[in-house]
Length: 241
Ligand code: SF4
Ligand code: SF4
Image (tube, rainbow, N blue to C red):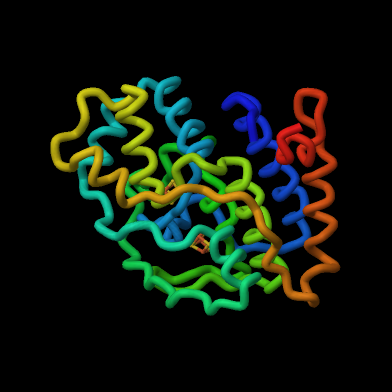
């Protein structure tokens, strides 16, 4: 991929728009102020971090962001990315043990409202449930929805390939400090330590799709690939053409 950041941001918004249109077929219980799904374990790409940082700068929220990131970053390092997991499956390997979410609330949540809502990453956009989640409880979604959300995450990771991938707070910390959106660097953590907790987004090797989900999910993938941004199809942009 040799496209510029602005084009990648536009592609991200187009992908999210196609996903939102496709997801209209589900009746979700999600509503404003319902936020027990908002924990500290959201993973993002560098492109998504840039969109959040643009929102922070536009709203003159730089000090607010620095203070939020000073409240404690998760110690855990990034595991396999979704595309690394797909590559492992392609090679017949076993998936790694699942990480148990601590359930600690996301620091961007204030009075049960997301302070970066218009710029939130895809992982936040796709979290949904057909019945209301209790705090610490599980969301309920159809397998096809989960499969679609995973496929779209893979496309977004491909879009952000070879840039940072990891916990939202870590990636925002690193890119925010390096781009001086957060300045001075919060004293609690060293930039190198936090960078080492991130990994790198990878190209898409294959979709993690069960045969039973294909009939509903493939039309979404095709609609994303056919969409145009700046006169090019998303498929061509993702292929670096
Ligand atoms: S996923 Fe669950 S907690 Fe999150 S908004 Fe939907 S119903 Fe509420
Ligand atoms: S960024 Fe916003 S939507 Fe995402 S987990 Fe945090 S509060 Fe929730």
